[in-house]
Length: 350
Image 1 (cartoon, rainbow, N blue to C red):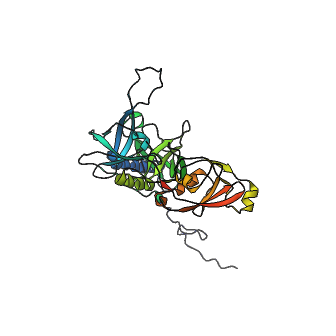
Image 2 (cartoon, rainbow, N blue to C red):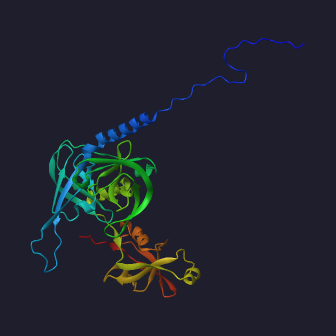
C-alpha cells in the first residue's frame, strides 16, 4: 500500500513558478501626452528666436514693348532664427539675395530693419543682422549626431502665417540638393515635417530644442519630401560670412559636361572612373587657359583624386586650393596627360 503524504495548498501549484509583477506599460494616451509635451516645450524654447523676414528687391527688367507700368520692386518673405545675442540671424540666401530693404519681425511683435552681412547662393545660406536688445537665441545642435527616425520640428512663417510649427521625423541623411546657383549642397537632411513657401530659412529642431538644420526646400507637388541644410554646414558658412561677407572658393574657368568614357580607354589607362568632364568652353585668362587646357579634353582627375563628374570637381575646389598648384589628369584623344593648374579665387556672384 502506497504512502500518501498530504500537502497543504498555499495557492501555488507545484509546477507553477511564483508570479512576477509585469513592468508598467504606458497607455497610448500617455505616450501622446509625452509627445505633445515635447513639442510644446520645443515651441516655447525656440519660438521666440524665430523671426519673420520681409524683403524688397528691384524688379527684373522687362523686355522692350512690355507694360511700362510694371512694378519697380518686388517683395518676398521668409523665415530665420537668431543665433547670437548681438543680433546675427541665419536664413536662406534665396530669401534675401539682392534685397534693397530687409525688415525683421520678432516673435514679441517688435520690428527692425536688418542689414545683409553676407550670402552664399552655392549653399543657399545668408546672414543678416539687427540691432535690438533682449534677444532670445536659438541653441545649436550637432547634425552629426542626428539619426533617421528621430523627431524633427520645423518652425517658420509659411505663406505669411507667423510662427507656425509642424512636426515629423528625420526621413534620411546625407542627401544632396542642387542650389539655385547650380552647385550641389551636400549632407542635406530630409524630413517629412511639412514645409511651405515662407518656411525657408527657419530652424529644423530636435526634441531637445536644438537647431539641427536650416529649412530650405520642398519638392512640389510631392508630399513629405522636405529638406534642411545641416547645421554644421550652416555654422561654418555663417562664420565665413560674418568674417568676410562671402565664401572663398577656387575655380578653374572650365565649362564642361559629364560624359561616359570608352571602356577601352578605361582599361588601357587603368582609370578608376568610367566617366569624366568634357571641356566645352574655357574662360579667357582663366587658370584652365593658362594651364593649356583645350576644348575637347576630358578631365578625369585632379591632385590625385579621381573625378567622374562636374559635382566632384566642385567639391575639390575649396578655399584651400586657391593659388595652389595641382596636377590635373586629362584625356586628349586617346592619350592620357597630366597638366599643372593653379586654381584662382572664384568671382562673387551678383
